[in-house]
Length: 237
Length: 308
Image 1 (cartoon, rainbow over the protein chains, first blue to last red):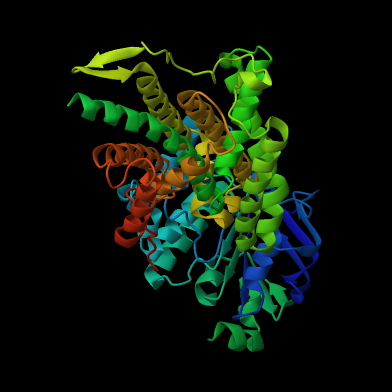
Image 2: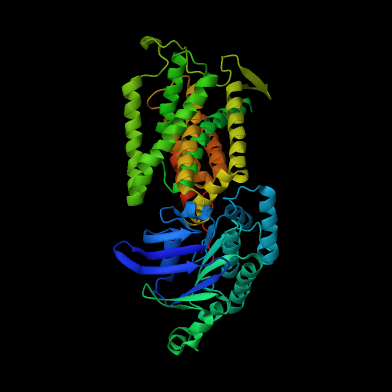
């Protein structure tokens, strides 16, 4: 059974439909990457999955229909989202941001504290800035915080909306390495939206190509980069 | 010196009432970014309820929790039925709605309890005066450095300090407090970490109104009666307190209330000739003006920080 299965998913803003009948599958333990140009509907796809905008069609998580659930209820089902533009709590300390990430958990404060230590170990910069307000962190640090906060909920599925946006290439690589490690070591399933095709392709189990709200190609990273037209148009090499 | 201490403590106990109403304003403002104009009138309704309980022979120890519960339910209901649906359409309209609620509640109090200070033996009140939480007979004083300080003043002040401590624990040690802070900081992201933002806002309004109810009862106790105009000036002072302390800082609201209370009493006491009792509300407005000019975010409010 796939961890995420969206069928005939359409969504948009007010009268404008951005996403047209897409079908999207993430299998357990996969990193699925959605590639597309500006305005292709990548962020809209994420929002439609996480329930933050009205949507038609159906979204199933582990075979359970979550189409009718509110965004916070979907998070409690084990889907954590790293929104575009990071979306940290700027007035709260780094530490409280992580606490907020664990707010849906009921497995006791010791387990939460252990996870926190773990992500501080993973992102030492955050540990150094633990008591600082999140709003005062640099862009890269905030992105790390957003990811660490999402992971604090112990998600089954992580949604990442353009984590590389506005980051230096080196920091992007570092971030992707962390995501890849989590996927390998703990079987975390990931749905990731990216413009930065080259980096994302490396770790993708499968890739969807999104163009003006429709999926125009789908396959493994090798299959897509083997296709000349696709490679030229989207991957730029 | 004695006079100074007396005025100081009178100011602190008056200020404690402003602190309580200001706390309600701040808790709501942090959650939804709205200034609740009806905060004082919501408290007044609950104060009347406590008076009514007294008429029915219910002791204050039970009547006060009842009043605060009525406040909580009223606050939560107002948020769910009025504020939430209207805020979706227009944030500005919420401002008008809370003004309307202010009028409506005052009218409702008048319709039920009539336009007179209560208790009132003329209309058959069985209580002598509005019940006070602390001893307030004419001889309930303690001697502090030669000044006779009312036990009531000390009690009210202590009550606010204890309540502030409890709220500090709520905001810093509990999941509800963390959720309230998160919603205040970024409501969209709060949803994305699984916080039930609607529930948090409902709770915020409920807690704010319950604290307001406590403020109303304390003030009616100091005043020894409840009447339709009881909360008018209190609301203005409380707004000044919240402005002074910073509209998003509960600790600031408490301190702001105390400072305003003391300033008010000192100004009216020491410059009786040109401020006196009539002009002392003006003192609050001057404080608001000065704070807005010098430090718009207040003493403890957070100026927005964001690195981009």
